[in-house]
Amino acid sequence: MGPVEFLVLAFPGETIGADVVAPLDSLCHTGGVRVIDSLIVTRRATGAVETAELTDFEHLKSVLTSSDEVNLIGQEDAAEAAGLLEPGTSALLVLVEHLWAAEAAVAFRAAGGRIAASVRIPPEHITEAHRALVDAEG
Image (tube, rainbow, N blue to C red; front, side, top):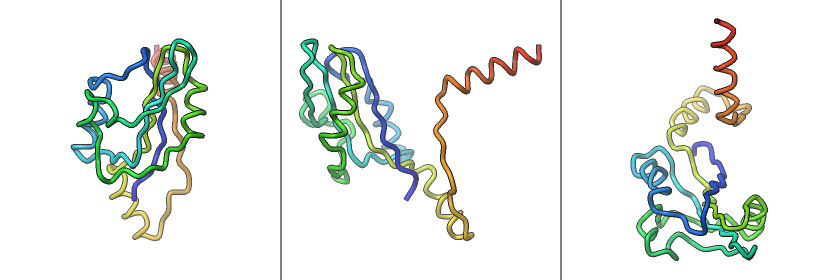
């Protein structure tokens, strides 16, 4: 199995459009990732929090639906994600396996190795580091 990651993808508005989910759906169909579980969390303008499955929305029924999904994202995860949301916004919670890394992980293990650490670096840190390097080179 490849690395597994839990993502909270937040969006303005109280609905998530199919166009927003389409890139993740494309990665699933090309074999880049496998969705293990997903959930939509909405914080209404009133502050009320609602959760729903993708299949609960007509415009999302065909996106990211897989018989492989298991219910691992729970209400505690939904509550924590809701705490990150402003009123009138929503989030897609998704647990994905990075299939692109699975083959490499198999090779590492076959050679007696292991992944000793994994650190996620926010994209803005890379952008800042690149900008500083360009500025230093002058």
